[in-house]
Length: 90
Image (cartoon, rainbow, N blue to C red; front, side, top):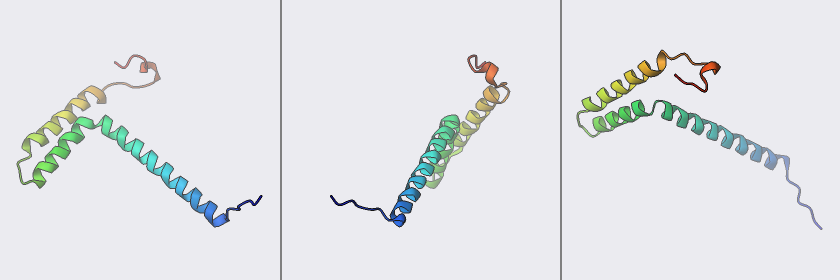
């Protein structure tokens, strides 16, 4: 029976590829988390940019983004967060 040996160069290439995939996954998870946390504001901002690129007025979308950001600030910024409020968020 013949055994195949993997050269160190091939092994290192596989390790580098694995590290790259792990980094991409971590960045994707972080992006999803940020998008979920700032979702409404981000959607309104993206809608405003899309309208501007299409040559339309984006005042409504920009106002919606500001309203969403203000609402999030009022709801979340003044809330004390810690382990004691883990089960009871408010």
